[in-house]
Length: 174
Image 1 (spheres, rainbow, N blue to C red):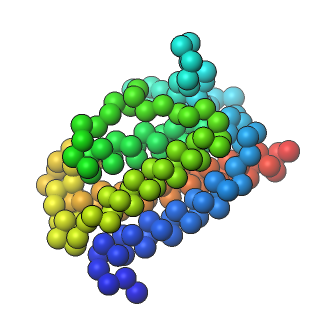
Image 2 (tube, rainbow, N blue to C red):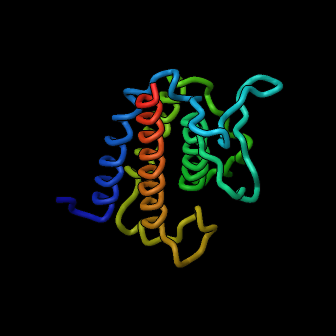
Image 3 (cartoon, rainbow, N blue to C red):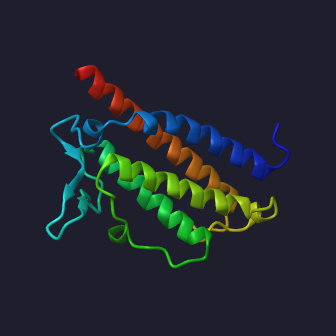
């Protein structure tokens, strides 16, 4: 049983990560850019090299179905910016977060973000959890660091489920 609120949030993160790792370990090259529908968002080769994620400032209607590549870029974006905020660094812009370009490098990138996040969690005390969250609510005093950590856990769980479902659908469709 967790002894503190920090321990409980860390336990929840570890549980979420273990579910994510199940899919990361099984991710095949064909999974990453598989387009599950005609109307989808993905990452595309950029004009100057690298990869460019599909994006719209206003959410389209209907919402495009994302590829695993797009979802992993999205995780990298929100998690990198959250870590920047949590470490007191100037947060990077969305366009500064680059998708690595294939499944193997993407999995390594996500595992590196996990390591950075664990360092953030390791520095926190229960008293820190009551401080105002720097992100994603932009210093709204109603949302604490505990809320931010719970949001990361929930967002990661949601993205893990999306990746798992896409991977299973691609396999089922052969």
